[in-house]
Image 1 (cartoon, rainbow, N blue to C red):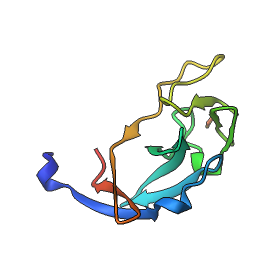
Image 2 (cartoon, rainbow, N blue to C red):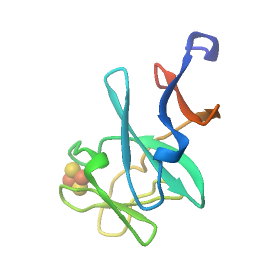
Image 3 (tube, protein in one colour):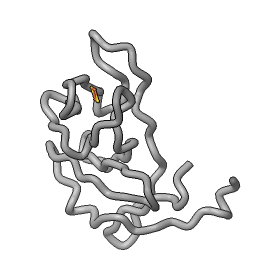
Image 4 (cartoon, protein in one colour):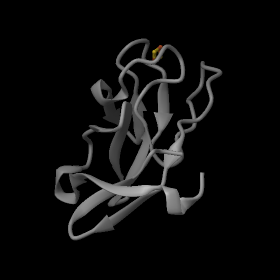
Length: 109
Ligand code: FES
């Protein structure tokens, strides 16, 4: 699908995305999480690559996002999985910031 077939949808206000907190949003029927990384808003897939737990219910500590189910952890900076697990990195989604709002592509790539 080309970018011209995507619509950019506002999913949250930028100031809703706070450091140390995971904000879950949805685009269509897909969950996405928004987190702060070094002050910037970053979007990742909203379900764990292990058994699809909602990462929006996870916790952030020391630069890692911890899955709420079996506690796999993912680096906030690039989504890579931490030691002890053999899981793919979290998919990062492009986003745009306009008029104080975070926009994601719909449909997501
Ligand atoms: S579902 Fe996330 S670690 Fe198992």
